[in-house]
Image (cartoon, rainbow, N blue to C red; front, top):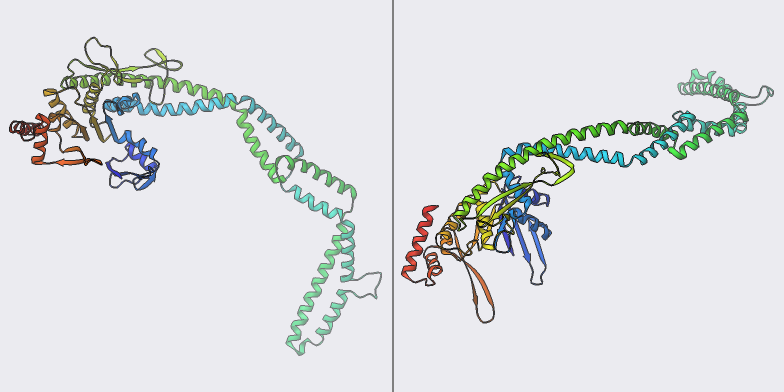
Length: 514
């Protein structure tokens, strides 16, 4: 099990990525662990959450900058070099960059919409034709909201007109009687007789009086129902021509509902939406003109902002490179020269910078690269190609010292940063590592006592072998143990009084410079 505790500030790239993965920060501390079982399976945890191992790999560059003979990271990447230069430049770059980023995002949106309209012109024309046909068909039919429901009810009534008339007539006769049969019994006559019988004796019992009142209400209700049945029968139209007209209208409305909606209300809703969409499609020509004009304005604005970014980066690059070159003079590379290449690539569809039309992207139009000329007469080449392993480590150390406080990486690991140097140069390397350690955590693998003496804490890594198993151990050196180890590193004789005196002098000198 390997566990690391990293202090990260809120809003830093590492904190943002960790929170995206579901991790939680404990008062600015991010806990990371990796467990590897004896069978080879591994698990990774980030801020208390289980995450894929790949997430840890993504965070590595933001948390630890490794500088070794064969493993150069961080500022070796051109993208990180541009970011480093921008942070070093400060407000001179950040202000126009913020404006540039806003204009760039708007230009991307405008260009995407313009491309969508122009590349789909044929499809949109076909869509407009279909909409016009449908709207014309609906307008020709002139449907009313709910008309299909009304016609369905009327068709049902007209289709059964004879049965409805017969039922209504029979019911009316049963309630009100048949004038041609005065002797026949009907409900109205019977209820009237019952009511008169109760009226004659209602004064003798209140309960019977209440029933007599209800009988009167029933007689009135029967009369009303009988009258409505008579009127219904009179109004009922059994005209087959009207039924044919209704069915024909229903057929026309059904043709609309098959195409545009499940009922006439849905058809009318489709027509409203279709009219809005047709207005939008018919306005595409105007929209293309508007978008083209806005695109041209945005490109002109980006040209101005990209030029401002280039100017600011070029000025900052000269200062940054000068400071790094000055640091290299004290790191056994007195003739080395560092410079920045701030250049652009030609692109006919790009923006104008320095009188040329160049490619541009979300970060401007500049391609930034750190170059090194290790000795007089040597051409300046990218730092990954223009230096040996030891030289490259010292270049990166110089860059980090100059850049300290602006790069968000909280931990630096230098492996063999002192390769090929000794004496005073080694002391200067130790002093500059200590200077960098004031703003970040610095871990150094070294064999030079001049470098180790500047460490706040010295660890001894050693292997032991019992004839069967080889083990690696790490021991923190304090006091006398540290003096003995520095003596061994100096002379190979940890008990030599001369070596001990030199080791104590080294420690005292290092403390005096911190």
